[in-house]
Image: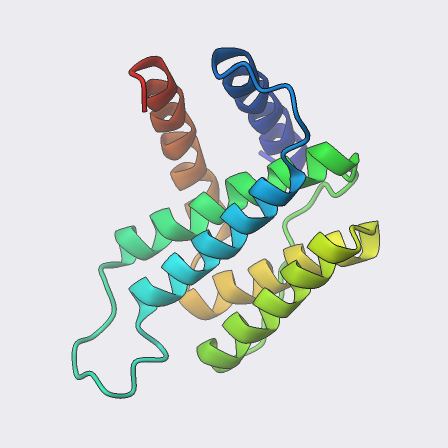
Length: 161
């Protein structure tokens, strides 16, 4: 499976949500903010910035689910702007401090929200590739979790989430 297949699945989910929720307005900013919130939730589960605490990170599965929540919004934002040419997962193999990476990722996302160019969109993917590497996630991990969460999102929509 490549990213094109994920874009297709995300388009189907987005269309379903828009139809189910009768969405008529442009939701770019809402999805941008949702991506930032998901990034923060991911950081919270890693606990990488919590220097004051001795409690370790959440379970790998919890962190992966939070990571994949972001992937849904990254794909969705790309669909909104027509930036869907990326096909392969961005393998970025560099050991990097997680706190610094989260802050840089947030900056890249904000830059894209304020000026949504394709170059800035691709930069988001690069940072998420870097996060995946530093969190120990493979593309296969991400796809498997995405497929599960995609089905859960449909279920949520059908049950009045």
